[in-house]
Length: 426
Image (cartoon, rainbow, N blue to C red; front, side):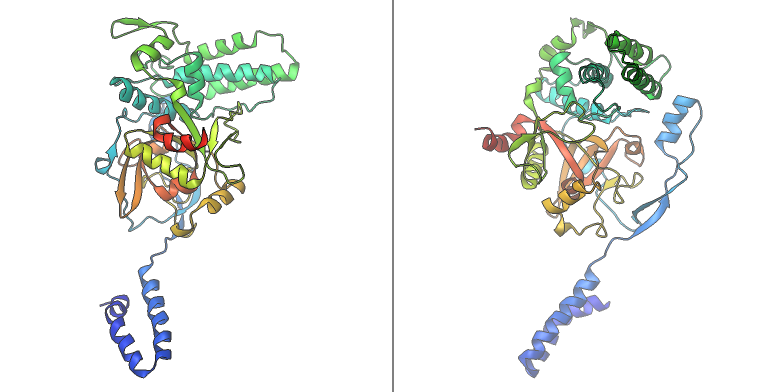
């Protein structure tokens, strides 16, 4: 019998003995017992410095892009020591919504498009019953065009990058519609994975030249489309799907039966008023969308739970550069050496947002959940190269504490958030 068990089993006898001495001794013995049992019961997480082995990026993507495998990063990272730990990493034990199998975004900064597209695929199945693989690159193509248009409009006063936010797909749906993967995949012949290094280099170099040389009378959008066509081709104006000819908009309306107005975005920042719309002040929100409803952390988590437990998936974006997020373990957790679970709240979340510890790294999709001892765990569909490592390719497993502390914004169907929206929009 260990010491902790001894004190747990014999605390009654000790207290009884102390009572026979006097009450003052009883009072002093009880805290002593509680201190010992608590000390032995808690198992604080430990950290270590570790190198990451070659994974999906080096073995699959780089081999496709360069013809040979890449080398593992030659650096040590400060990470949680997961030795001896176990977590709920069996997808079969999660209650899930329909979704397509995970796919890799390749060598491209387009996680936002993969998260949003997969979210719409799940929505389309829920609305129409059709299991469709949609084209992420259709959305990416028109996002590049929109960014170039805004660059011209603001005379270069916008962020130029590959990143965006998942609600960008709403703008593309409004203006252009949606397209199946079979009609347009953005890959050149023989290409297995996206490689957008050359595309983005050319795109940025040209727009930088426009700004530096004051070439605002140039056919800027036309030349941007030429760059896109060379690298990811041009989406067709019409296509045949299941024997019928569609435009992207008619496909969205008639076949998928999804509407961009059905989707709402939420965030939780203490520095903004709650229950009001506000801009998400992140570089990837390059078009300064103020369509985010800022709500309390309790409401934020309520929407996530309500959505996934009632058959709706969730697109979410946030921080995946954390000691408790190691690709080989497949989980996202908050170690006790970061902050104990009982102290995770709106204040600890806000501090990390304000001091830059929480950054907008990655967008993913919640596709399932399970509840273990009053703790929610979420099944995550992940298109990133790190998400393809581990035993369950393309899936991660997040504790709710991780989402509560580190996930910055979400997009859900209006019905999943109706209770909260009805309190805001009156």
